Every structure is written in structure tokens, then in C-alpha cells.
Length: 183
Image (cartoon, rainbow, N blue to C red; front, side, top):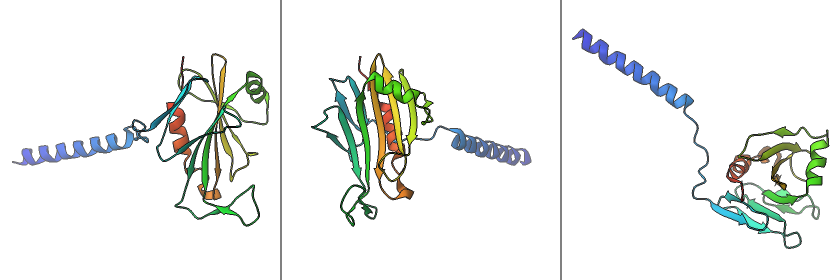
């Protein structure tokens, strides 16, 4: 009888320890993108997925600029940085996709004022840096993507409270993880 109790306690201890290690070291679930919408740009030959509560906008003056925008109505309004004094808006989070030239790309890579880091993402060249000069409530995150002579910059900008500036950075990262150059 004592052997059975000892065996049951031993099994429970082993299961508890195994459960802890599975919980601690199992990959954390990221935002699921399988039900996101897909934007495809056939002219520039790229695509990415984005959440349905983000609005896609194409700048008619610059058809090469595509923006995803999220207005956060759950936060208090902030003063608008480019408007009339005392003009307040709900925080806006924007992700810009813009086709770039090889010259622009090379000039950024040669500029020592940016701490450009190479990151792993897909089967193309990816570089990322923070730009404190961006017109927003905090640093912009700029990601440069290059494949076979095609250059795209993807920039995260927010007009928000400084403490919530990076509220949707994880969405930015997830959108980047779905980015593909179309061959």
C-alpha cells in the first residue's frame, strides 16, 4: 500500500514538474494572422496581412505610399502635432509602406547617425532602426526591406500619449512577419 501511495505521489510530482517546464518553455502564442486580411500590390510586387480593425489607405498624391491606420478610441485625446493649437485627436497609430529607390536605401545604410541593425525575416535583406526625428510622440521604427533590387520601407509612427506610443508595436512586428515579395 505504501508503494502505491509513493508511486502516485512520484507520478504527480513528475507531472507537475513536466507541466511547469512545458508552460515555461513552450513557444508563446503570438497574435494569430490566419484570419487577417491580405493587401497585395501587384505593381510593386509585395503583399502583407493586416488586422481587419486597421484601415488601409493609399495616398492618391503618392500612389507608392500605402498606410495602415488605427485610431484608438479607448484612450484620451492628444494634441495634434501639426494643427491648430488646442486641437485634439484620438491617438493614431500608422504603419507606412513605401517603395524606395536604391540610392535612398544606400544613403540610409551609409548614414552613421542611425544604429541600423540587420534582422532575420524571410528570405530577403531586412534592416531596422529607430528614428527619433520622426514627427510623432516617440521614435519611429523604420524597417528597410530589399530583394532583387526592390526596396520597401515600413515605418511605425504614432501620435499618441508617450506612455502608449508603442502600444501596437507587436502588431507592427506581426504585419512584418507576414510581408512577402511576390516573384
